[in-house]
Image (cartoon, rainbow, N blue to C red; front, side, top):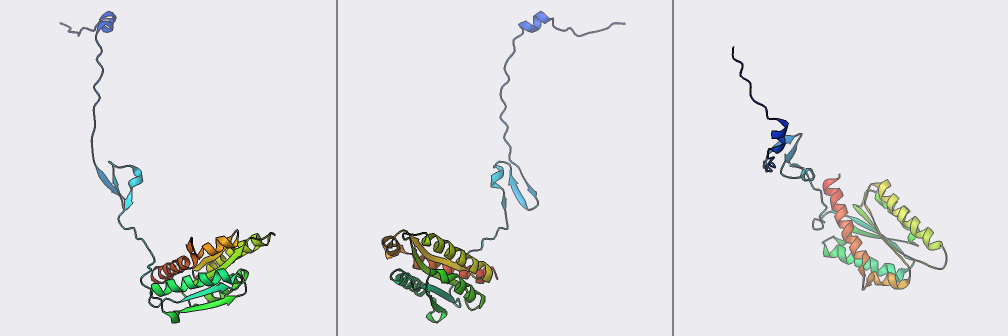
Length: 209
């Protein structure tokens, strides 16, 4: 019986054999699969995972018919709060809010804004409450106490009533800063806040009922 065996290279022949580097192989593929409503494209990173049914809810500033607003205004620092109010009312007019759908409520100072805004919100007569005031730093710590309390009060009014309460209270270092933001070179924050009130009222009325 003949036995045929393949010959194995000796260690010497192995070491002398030329070892050629492997050529890199470029792999290219494109595939996609669907998993629980997500469409994943393997050509893209995982950060590009998207859903086909995402809804974006945005308030409109053009659909103002039927929306009602209250504006709570502090009399203290009226040289500032009055032009803020005028800017807000002018913006409401520009965006076709009827004058009979706007109520202006005056309070002694910014500290009293929160409780009145909450009462108005809970009345369910308004779609948004715009809060206007001016707190200017003085020589004591009174500024810090009032500014923090006003911000907290307006926030609580919105949370407790479920009606958007827009913070339009200026908290400034001096009178020049306040006047600049009440129709001066820095614009009119009352007008800006009125536009915010319209958008939030629309968002709640059309999408978040």
